[in-house]
Length: 477
Image (cartoon, rainbow, N blue to C red; front, side):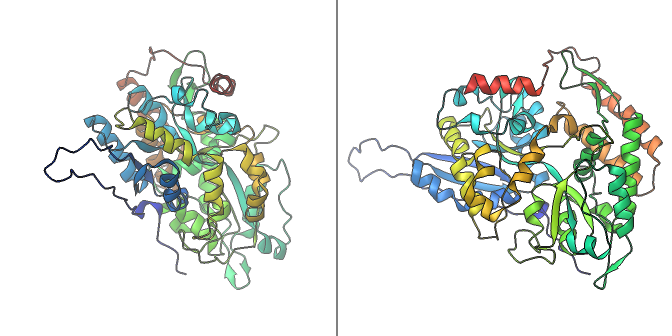
């Protein structure tokens, strides 16, 4: 079977130039106002395609021309860090992954947006789902970015496969044990001439495997640290060898055993694409894939084999404990070196507005591939509901979702993620057992945190709770 090998890592963006002004002849010329422009550096996620299509509307509305460039995930992060360290003005608006916000803000690399947002009626901060702002865009009681694409996590399953194998649709409150039991009933069965895999996982290290695994560890109440970020005093003592974390890693390895063998090397989109090839019974992943699995390939517009033949249900929970849903996504921030802060805010405000986000959702150049909304009004919009009838389900999945619990944005998150991702991959590959891998993670976390003066933590803490975010929203409205 041939599978798509196009991933978001390989995405190449485009740029749009802007013209300058010239003097007139040899006569003393009056001063000519310089054209307003803004430089935007984004990641090659699906929202970027839809946003790029609308850039002429932004220029027509504001008179601000846009230099727009898209990069792969790793390339974007490397480029941003390079510009920050060298203190060069590489862009006026940048994409920020949720876990980078703490490091970027504490180092002074991006600037808080409170003063821009406060009292700006065009921004309408009260329309944002508060869980998205809490998970993606706040740090130490400040608004530091604005969500442009937010993802909860849910389960996608093949309706026809369930029907032919006599499996009932998962009911509300189902557990991870039930999830695994259903996968076992599917794995190895032949349905319509196709040998089925129970599920599919992301196994590629260091980043993708952590992103998928962290939904499982959040559900099983396996925190990374002793007290962070929702604590009066932060304590970064690592908890990576806890019994709950061992249970989560053991379960993830079992899920890999019910997946295609090659998924140990799968990145984010590889897993979603594999589901669209019609040999996967059920999997959990970002809500962005509620639409992306309809396409056969990354933003190709060509219909997949499973289009119209899958259902969506919430992630399982751990027994009677409430489900903890990971919430992630991309936001727009403003570097401290931005040369055009006013134009940058105009772009951020426009790109994240309900009007623009709706237009992105209705853009069908690639087959309606953007439904990752952060604004409350869009989940009830009748035009969007015609295209994305699952929006009420997606909105319900945001209730109580908390990305900071799933992947805590410690200021050295990237280093820690690299350590964890390598060991998770080794467990899947059978190169390390669960206990040994997590002891190694815990030791390396302790060394890294101590070396970065985070153990013990003597800097000011901030009790980063959902209530604190709601108070911030009220202060900026």
